[in-house]
Image 1 (tube, rainbow, N blue to C red):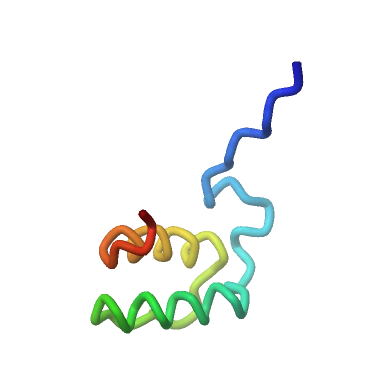
Image 2: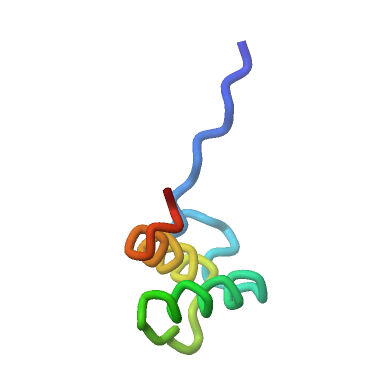
Length: 63
């Protein structure tokens, strides 16, 4: 039986310390605007992913 790959935590990503991607930045801007927040400068892919998760919960978009 083939088991799906378990989802890795962002801090375990091999590319997690690279700058966030364009799509991450765009989505973060949308979420941050809805949440009344500012997106910090210089986020890594891992930190952007964590912030996306947090803002999705706060805005209800992650449901």
